[in-house]
Image (tube, rainbow, N blue to C red):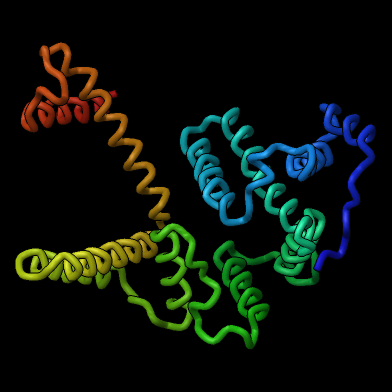
Amino acid sequence: MMDKIALPLPLGKSDELVNDETAGLPRLLEIMRRLRDPKTGCPWDIEQDFASITPYTIEEAYEVADAIERGEMGDLRDELGDLLLQVVYHSQMAQEAGLFGFDDVVDAISAKMYRRHPHVFGNESRDKTATQQVSDWEQIKAAERGASAVSALDGVAAGLPALTRAIKLQNRAARVGFDWPETAMVLDKIIEEAGELVEAQDSLGKDEIAEEFGDLLFVMANLARHLDLEPETVLRSANAKFTRRFKMVEDLLPAQGKTPEGSNLAEMDALWDEVKRCEKLS
């Protein structure tokens, strides 16, 4: 239940706030309250609930990551605003349901950050490596989960992107000793899983092929963890590289009187190799 109940402002005060371009966060909170007003708000906003807004929340988080990946700080400012709006939106709906309000969200994360950084806000020494501090963070989280945690894997959200969740599951398992001690062993497992996938493709049905492919992806994620790489980030970079190179192939085809649809693989592959060569020389 909410600790703080924000009462609606009188209409005059509300109008003054939503038109004040210097009012910062209080302005945004009031704009959202007005959008959700059942009598005078926006019909689309009024109809939304937690489930219908969740896809937008996920999308906005990815758009923040995309702006960072592109190094576009102006876009990052705008995307962070869109992501903040998602927090405000969920908080407003929760307040309407009598669950919690935006201030409760702020108080909860402030208390968590304070509690999990005793080396900054308490008496613990700051003389630790980043790795040691991450370990301490995880120990504090485990203590907070306490008796409610039945498995070392409890608390890893099922809704995470699959590669990200794979890393988190593997990290949890590694903390209790279930992990390959050497990267070479992971590479051996990748060879094994690739062989099983080939075998499945030759002799098994689609479901078995999908299972073997999933196993291979899972071990590839584990290799990323052993190499200290973030697979989602690495794959986004690979996607960006593919997009850049393919568009350059598309741009080069007209000089040969061709289009992608009117070309064959050998022609496009030759241009692809030329694009790669030029990139390496630049």
